[in-house]
Image 1 (cartoon, rainbow, N blue to C red):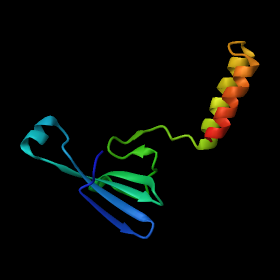
Image 2 (cartoon, rainbow, N blue to C red):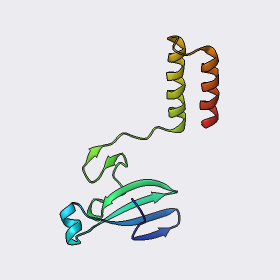
Image 3 (cartoon, rainbow, N blue to C red):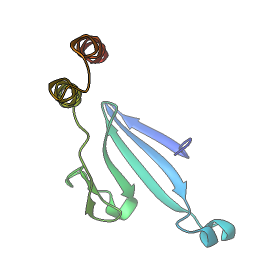
Length: 111
């Protein structure tokens, strides 16, 4: 998204203010809309236009389109998913036990 137009903070809460054009025509005419990103302890909890910006909304909702977005997997979930896929490859005979052990070690070190 680039550099924000402005940043404000209060304790562990930060607000990043961006200027966006909604269409190419708006950009050509110099028409911009304020968009905000709210971070708490460095994690995005809300984002959107000022009128859409409501800290009580579920952060998994895209408040611009009101459509559900997929939640990010936690590190443990990602690790489990990778290990499960790796084990499946071993069980199907696609990789050897040696390859499995090597990849498993790399996954465990990554998380």
